[in-house]
Image 1: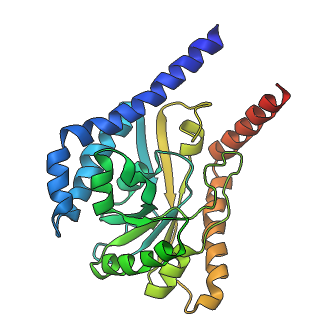
Image 2 (image 1 turned 90 degrees about the horizontal axis):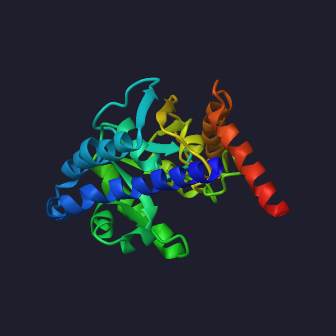
Image 3 (image 1 turned 135 degrees about the horizontal axis):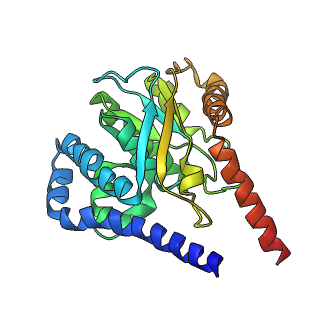
Length: 266
């Protein structure tokens, strides 16, 4: 009986996340649409996302972001922001980390979400992962963003929704972007999202979401060394996960493996 109550409470809490995410979009939609449609409206849209939408969701869910900065990112300089991707919370955590406007590279599929999609397609760099033409088009769109002095954020993991892996391998696209434009990479480790709000509703709880940022990594000069850049960035993020004194990420992985094994036995 207790397990049923706990599972029901967890599902209701998870469902509350989507309600919280939808309320500002619905109530502020006319303003958001007008701002997103204006050619110079992105800084304002980013401010709304960071200071209204994100706190509304995170505080409403019982979360608070705590960031450990190696050094604050200076304004007016472009970076490639890279982090592990283990939760629906990750974009909102990234908003709280960076005061300076950045643009997400995100899946094209999200434009199908009612209301949100019409804003999203005007605010993000869209990529259709099944189309090589679309993937190449990212570089042209990112170039315009970088020329405006803004940063770009990418979660580069392959098959990131596999909760039984602590940190999957990285795709090359993000690092091609860094090399082509010679912008430094800022690796970040999101320490708690995988344990407190994983992709699947198997467990979770509110609390502090810790973020650790690391010194920027300068891009290599040629594409010949792209694998070295990939590995260096991934190693930094993985080391951050493994050195967590609370070991949240690995605990989440262990729980998911146990749950998967129990399902197989049934």
